[in-house]
Image (cartoon, rainbow, N blue to C red; front, side, top):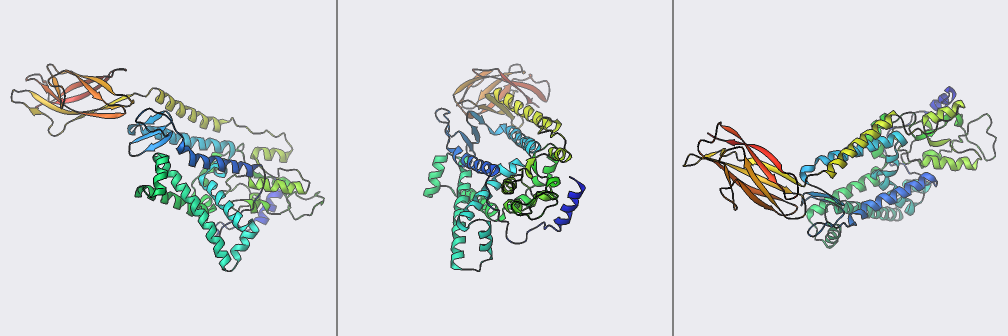
Length: 480
């Protein structure tokens, strides 16, 4: 940016208020490429949020048939053919890492594209503003409505708007709880009054925050509450696509009339359409700012103004600072460079994490074992001089079919085991575990007199599944 353009902007900038104490910004309706993209993004994200829980997936008899389900009561999470158990909570860590570095990569490539098109706050604020626009009109009419004295007509319009907002917020809250139980059953229970107080409470909290933040907080969430706006600049470099203003071309700005000669002056006609159309009410002509969510609506607004004056588009554009600087100096525009060190690092981490999760899922064990030694008492001396220890032996059968496992003990000569409710005085026993469940067995291991060499002795449990490798667990056997 030239020094002259910088001086003009600094002179016109003045004291820009950081906080709007009363009311909120009323964005003007615009048409264009970015506005169309935002409508499509809204339609896709809302459709996924509300209709994805109704997708079905056949997992066999006795299994839930909802494709995506977080079953809190059954302590399972289902994603199509993937079933996650509670002890596999580490997959959540992987999902969070994927989400974080995907956001970082999106920011490095295209700025705050998440904030401008996909964030739930942006989507619902857009939706609520559309409702307000239908009832009250565009920006000028809504601002006039705010200044009107209280009347029956004004109260009726405000009431109508809030009723629609509440209905949309309720749908948001209901949509949330449908992910945590069978969607069809929960929806029926909610509307027939048969759902639990917990269900209504969660839906009310989610819907309440949707109403509060989307209908009334609006841009304040993006500017003052969202932490991402504070550190998003760390994700950007000179090749990141962001909403930019070509000050070298636009300054010195000033009002103009159609057909005016623009020789010796900037192309910016100071119409402030970019400010009026911005959801957060910023002036992009002051440069990239914390409150800019990268939605591109100011690009659409400015393009239409440029068309009216017969000027080339791109005064405000979705471009990189490197391209803007090259145009200002008359150099060849380098274009967008998606492959660079920053994006390679983010992309590489994404590939590593995604590959690790995929390999882990493909090689998941279908059986897990947990051995717990009894602590009170640690051992019992029998009347014949033998020593007995108690264990809780748990088998997680992670497939949906009944299986019979063979368990044997090794490491102590002459040792045998008794399974409560099952085999007695055996070194090898068969344990039946139903499909998709945990089998818990109470086992007592007895060692004959003189077989122990120390107070703590090694004991090995070996479990042989019917269709996989043996699982070996070493534990201790306590003695006097």
